[in-house]
Length: 385
Image (tube, rainbow, N blue to C red):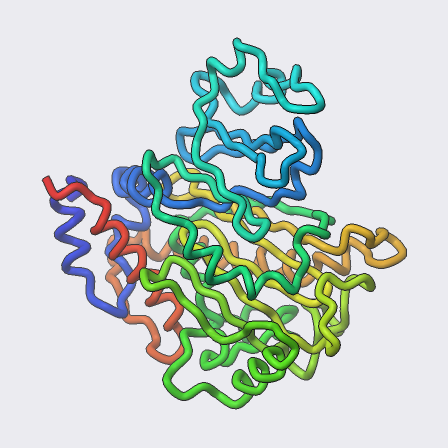
């Protein structure tokens, strides 16, 4: 049941609006197919330019079998490059690169012999890498989302804090869990203080846009902030603005800003949250006082790494303009709660009695859209012979 032919057959038999068959969530051979045809051929969110502010600065992460390093090579804004490190473990990357110099980075020959350049693009201050020989054209992404993201001044932000957790569940379960708020009222008491769980607001919009969403869009567009739902033709990315409840302005326990110095200087601070999703690796929240990025990386068929980063105005001073605890509290709790849900779902799928079930046509439109994207993308990329 794990041959390429049978995998394609299962995908073709996938019932629209239903969860995937059991092997897609637990089988290591199916996971290997995910890595080869989804993760190694897609644009994957790596990090932000502000993580490598100076020439020679770098960060590392591992994508499947590929240890990857992202380096700022010169003072030029776009001169951030990515490499796959051949025959080397992540634990010794720092030692390998320690002889980088200021100015224009010139890596020693013994280092460059171990580096394979890979595609790296800075799209609206989001760094994407691709291991594909000829990756998909990423230009439409920048064209579509740049006006949405521009008001948040990402070139003037810094990372105030970050967290990494491991979830004992398949990466698709992590993404599916994030694609709906059906579970929010009973599982996220901190988040629902500010975030609307209304599926007509947080899901894929129906033909009739609800008034609360329409009012939010019109108000923000009057301030020159694009807000209406936009999704790429193939479903890889989407962006939209949603209102927060009761005129709140941030994800905090009282709904008020966590950071005094704003990242978005709209006249009215009640601008909701701009949501930006990019499959297979990222979702994001843009608020008036902070930007939160989430990156997931598969580790095994039943283990996923989730990294969260809180970005704020680079001039904000800790203890004066914000505290780390207040900035992080709501999403720290939400991430842990979601981890529990993902792990419980994985246990259910591991049961021999698991059968694919239907998604709610009202509450889980975002999940169904992700599963459609996954199925369509995998079918397109799998070899037919």
